[in-house]
Length: 145
View 1: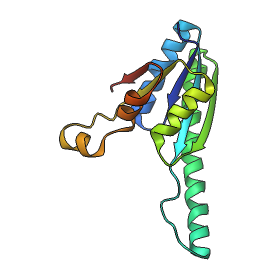
View 2 (view 1 turned 60 degrees about the vertical axis):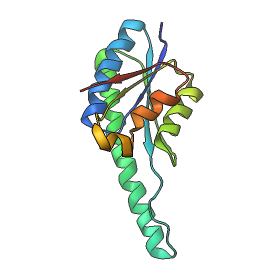
View 3 (view 1 turned 180 degrees about the horizontal axis):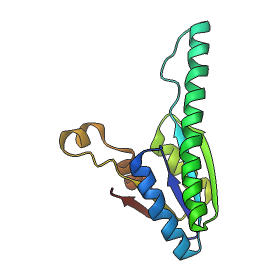
C-alpha cells in the first residue's frame, strides 16, 4: 500500500518514537523511508561581521543537530532492514518544507510525532504536526508518545 514514507525529524523523543513506528510500518509494506530535517532560517538580521559570525555559528549548530537526528533515524531504519535516504533543508516555515519534500520525493505517507500541546498553547502556537495534517495531500500518521 505505501512505498515511500516521509519521516520528518527534529531529534526529539517524539520524533524518535515516530521513527520506530515508521520503520515497522515500512518493513511490513516493503517501503522505503525518506527522512527530512528542516532548519529554520537564521533568526537575526544584522549588519557587519557580527552577523556573519552569528550566522556561521547558527548554521554549524543546526547542521550538527540535523546530522544527529538523521543519523538516529538511519540507525532505526538500518536495524529494521528498511531502505533510508535523508536530507536537510532550509525553509522559513517548517511545515511547508515537510510538505514540499513529501511532494518532491513522491512520498505516499507522512509519519511524524506529535508534541501533544493542549489547551490555550495549542490554540495560540499550533503545531507543525497539526499544520502538516491540515495541508498534506497524502495521508499523515501522527504518532503519540
